[in-house]
Image (cartoon, rainbow, N blue to C red; front, side, top):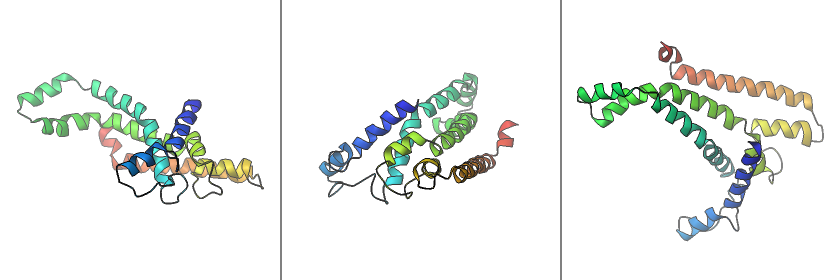
Length: 185
């Protein structure tokens, strides 16, 4: 898996390239931009560019989870909604979405954990930027432990604990937001 992430990320490095990238060429040709943008070098665009790659890479997994959730919805529920005279939008809002909520919960939680900790994507996209300004927690820990002059493995380990705590906090907030207890009942 990491090799495919590195290849995909390197592809996006080329797509985002300032001089020869397809994205700049397309946007300048369509006159949506006056000139090229340094997507991976400008502080205003680098994080959004990395997030876009993370979302793109996680789309297949999310699609499979949503399709599995849709396949698990019994057809009788849709038939009952149709008999009751529900419109397509009403059926989606009152039947499909609530029954799809557990699959969406799994997809969102796992994608947050995955994208937040995706070392190969961020490292490949961000390896040309010096310092720590464009790092995520995982690449920052790596640089502190192995690339900095101090080689402070203890600090990197402590940051790893903070990283796990942040992920658990985010998952806890999300579960509370979607009322996990009610969905399980």
